[in-house]
Length: 141
Image 1 (spheres, rainbow, N blue to C red):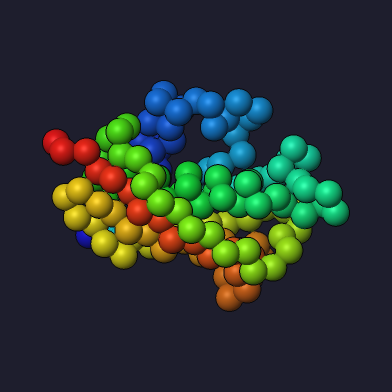
Image 2 (image 1 turned 135 degrees about the vertical axis):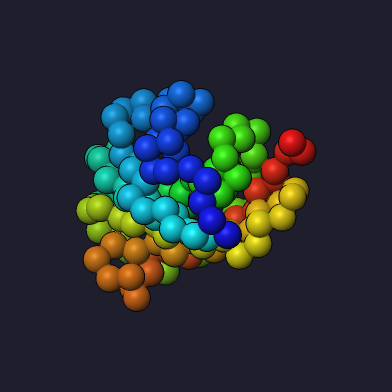
């Protein structure tokens, strides 16, 4: 499956339709769009940390959701009403307070549903800090 939006187009759509994700400044940046996948960089700030100084679970959950949404958009176009119907996340390692990457791979892209696999890592893509799966509902055209 070929992407139909560029990184710049996805950023513009998010800025216009979901400006709230950048309330405290941009922390999510789409870094790569390839056939069937999207990668996003997350630059956590102090508000994204939990006691003990690690990146919080809700911040990683948001990273997975934003990246999965970007993957769906990049492959179907700017459809604001594509919505998360489920997202399951497993936390595997304590994430350090540093840049974090999420790479989402589209497992299935149908007319009504998209199923996404999300790998969240920091320095080494082979050492995941979290893994998620998401399903998105795509509205009829």
